[in-house]
Image 1 (tube, one colour):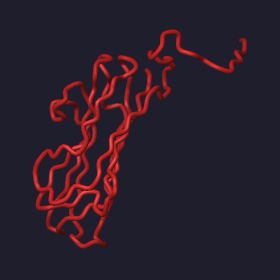
Image 2: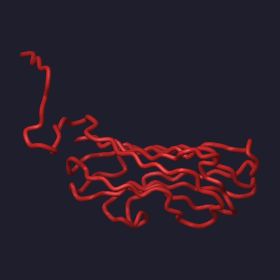
Image 3: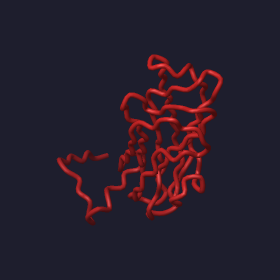
Image 4: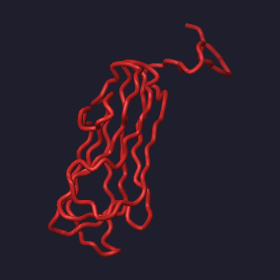
Length: 158
């Protein structure tokens, strides 16, 4: 068996990437600032468009919503979606997390995180959408005190 030593690997065709199964080939991130007085179903917080490098890729998706405040008797539910439709709820739900409030004071903040790997496989290299939505009971402040919520997606070649 031989050994191959290289200093660089370059893609043959520009913007196509190098297909190495099991490796991250692209990272996408969407962000949004503070949202106050939210009380609804399927609030679209982030809807980030991107183009997968390869059909058949799997994705690692994670989100972080900092500084949530809501009344202790009310719930907050966050959902992440991935797919080819610009309407998030028409895509595959890859994460769902739910919590309840701890209060509405400035010191009652909490952070909600979620992650998933492998629930979605890209069918093609058309435009895809990475989305973060919320459904609330009662009024909530999201990313309070000028914080930033984030959703990230790593495309992993298969």
